[in-house]
Length: 361
Image 1 (tube, one colour):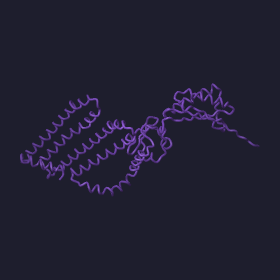
Image 2 (image 1 turned 120 degrees about the horizontal axis):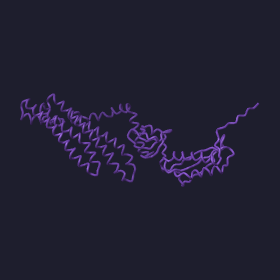
Image 3 (image 1 turned 90 degrees about the vertical axis):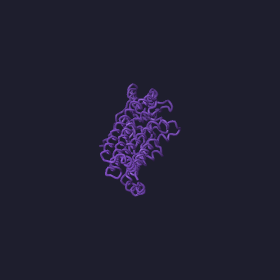
């Protein structure tokens, strides 16, 4: 027997013996419903004037978040329980009004399912991060976003099972028993979502990157990893835009991690000078430019390499090291600006592309 039928039968036996006629039952039902609305209003006032006032004076933020999350659900719970009890007084479990009791209990259950999901997110967003940061390993920090999504899913599934079994009297065991057959159909229908989920698992176990790393995916999508979720990974690109990339794409693409295993990054700048230029002089000027920039590290020290006799220029490579990958573009800008000005001062020519055409007669 479902929970709502038990309560309805008890209410019918209790109030039916006290008030035999339908008129008295209607009066009692209206009084119960009106009383529940007044009680809900009083509870809401208590939360606003007393509970929230008290929690706002504590040094913890978590109590404010929890009280705000449960304030409205408690308000709705008092009203819904009053309506449920009023209908039970009027009709009882055997009457056609029983369907409305089932609907009310279903609504009440859904309210608290969403409330539990909200509380779960408060836990993962405001409590657990500070706990896992105290541990030496970084695995728990990286797994936390995945557990957050999985726990939301578990709460939803358990809540739906309770509604079906407890309110509507549906036996959920056969549903779970047939999940294997249904799962095959779902696997075909949701193969993209499944591939993204397992792509997320592969990211956690392979650990190609972690939150805060600067990565490049495929052939040019560069950004800082913000969060790895069940289905997708969020990265903040160079233009401060949040890019959401499915994990299946990341798992099947080349990933360059500019931060791991260390944050130092090499920067290579190529420059060509005209044939006939003094090679030693070019090397000296490039080294002076490198040493004059604050973002360039002294260790490893900068170096200049004479790479090639090109088609129309002598090609040099200036090798620099910066502390963080984010410094790369600032250094390239400063170096190229100084190369233009210093080469002009030193009389070093940067040639245009030229080609010699021999016309045989």
